[in-house]
Structures are given as C-alpha cells and as structure tokens.
Length: 362
Ligand code: NDP
Ligand code: ZN
Image (cartoon, rainbow, N blue to C red; front, side, top):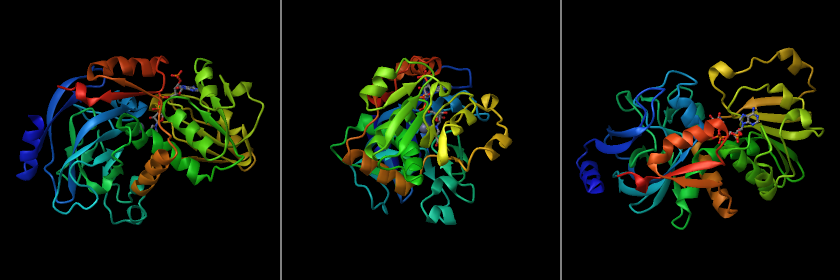
C-alpha cells in the first residue's frame, strides 16, 4: 500500500511520504513519526529501506552531544535497500537494484574536493548529511535518516550493491566500513605492519577485519576484557584493557573511542614516524584538551583526523568488502528495540553493531 502511494508520488513529482522513528528532543525516546521527503529530481532514486545500522554517531547526534540537533530527528546513515523508482536521467540504477546510502546525500559537485570525489570535504560547505542537516539544495528543509521506510537520494550518493550481497550486513559498511577503510588506505597499511585499534565496537571490528586483510598484525585496546575472546577469535593478536598495559610500538593506530580520553596515551605507542588516525568523536564536553608540547617531543609521529570517505572510495570499500567477504558483526533488532539498543551502546553492554530490520516498521 505504502509503496504504491510512494510510486504515484514519484511519478507525479509530489513529495514522498515516509514513516520512521524519531526523537522530539534530545532527552526523548524513539516513537513513530510520519514526514515527507523532497520530490524526486531527474537524477534521484527512491529507495525502499530494508536495513539501517545504528552508529554511535546517531547517539551523539540524537543527544545533541556535538551541537544542538534538529528535531524531530530521524537518525540513521547506514542504509541498505531496494531501488523502487528512478528519475529520468538516472544511469547507475534501475528499479529492483540494491543500493546503499551512507552519511551524505549531496554536495556542490563543483569545487576541487567534490571533483576529486572527496564530497565530505566540500569546499563550499555544502556537504549535506543524511540527517540532522538543512538541505540547501531543497529549500533548507531538514534531512531525515534511515530509521524509516524510504529515502530519496541523488544517484551519485548511493552505491551499487550486488543482488546476492547480505543486505543486513552491507548496511553498516556505509559508515563503519568506509570510516575505517579510508584511513587504513590513506596511511598505506600493508603486509607486516603493526596496527592497533582503540575502541572495539562497530567501527573497531571493521578496522580489525580490514587491517588483517591488508596483511597487518593487529592489537586491540578496549576499556575492559569483556571482548577479549571475540577479538582473538576474529584474528587479533592481543586485547589490552588499557594503553598503560602495552609494551609494544605500532606503525599505525586508529582511535574509534567515543568517550573522553587522552590521545597522547596512544600517540606514545607509535613508532618513530608512525601514524595515528582519529575517527572517534567524543561529546564536546568530554573532549580532552591535550598539551601540544607533548606532541612536539614525540618523535615525528603523525596524528590526523579522518571523516567517512568520498563516494568513489565508498564504492571501492564496498566492492573490496564483498570480494573478501568482510562484513560487520551484527545483531538484528526491530524498531521497538531502538531505545534499548541506545542504552546498551552507551553503558557497555552492546556487542558490535545493531541493525534495524525495517520490515518491523508497520
Ligand atoms: P560503538 O559504541 O559501537 O563502539 C565504541 C567502542 O569504544 C565500544 O566498544 C566501547 O567499549 C569503546 N570505548 C568507549 N570508551 C573507551 C575508552 N575510553 N577506551 C577504549 N575503548 C572505549 O561506536 P562506533 O564504533 O559506532 O563509533 C565510534 C566513534 O566513532 C563514535 O564517536 C562515532 O561518532 C565516531 N564515528 C566517526 C566517524 C567519522 O567519520 N570520523 C564515522 C562514524 C562514527 P564498550 O564495548 O565497553 O562499550
Ligand atoms: Zn556513522
């Protein structure tokens, strides 16, 4: 029924009605929410969302931990689904194809960064995030994410997913996958490198799998020993419950830690010239101000931040993941379990990635 209504709207250039789960304010719990998405443009596709991952960024945004959020908020930027309608100039997709959408839905397309497919760094500041963002290409209307039944997106910001791929496991690749793949590639991680991963959740497990595939030896830093067995079973060499326990040095460290911590504890564990990528984004009020003098004395170690990856690299990551059978560790939940999943992800009870089965949305 819903789908029929959406198809009629797509054909007649009307706004697309959607249903999802939203928060009305930062301290709220999730409840059903009806809204509209912008009408289909000539290069847009309409996707029926089948699965949506829950990223820790969803929690930071939902709770206004980085900035005041835009409410009602429908989070979700790890989206996998089926293409149900295409604009007349769409060339990458046809109806029935599978597609994935990550953290961005548009950008200017004309600046140097966009021309290099680094849309996340759009120099005009027009990177449109999938939710919690005002869309300057559509009358500054708020964007709504993947905890919903559909999404309209420019085909450029959707990736092609093969028909036989496990869609529930593909969804988290669209953020957790690309965010870890991109800095591993940027730093040239390869055979024989010693890599460490700080924060072993949804992103951390992807970093482990990619680094192993690239030929590295991988150590994990968690905040307790709860996930030691899982880490070793997945191929990690060792799991440390704190950087102070560690005697070895690394070529590359990626930090996915979402809480306040001292990054210098990890920088000190790099070899001379080693590199550390920071992708974890603790709440603003928990960010530790580090003493730059300590960095000056730390032997030419390089520390950089990294945010998701461009669309070209996102497709590359997806193709690489599917080729090497690299998928997240997931637990599928229904829409009525989003609130408890948020609880578990903040109090250390979560395993790795929760993925919402959108078939549970009625
Ligand atoms: P998860 O909650 O799935 O995983 C975070 C992990 O970090 C958990 O395993 C948690 O432990 C662990 N952890 C928390 N505090 C510490 C600590 N002090 N020391 C060591 N480990 C710790 O989150 P995600 O993987 O989804 O996201 C991680 C971070 O990355 C978030 O801040 C998110 O916003 C950010 N992010 C950044 C992106 C980017 O483009 N830069 C993109 C996507 C996410 P426990 O298992 O005990 O809970
Ligand atoms: Zn994310």
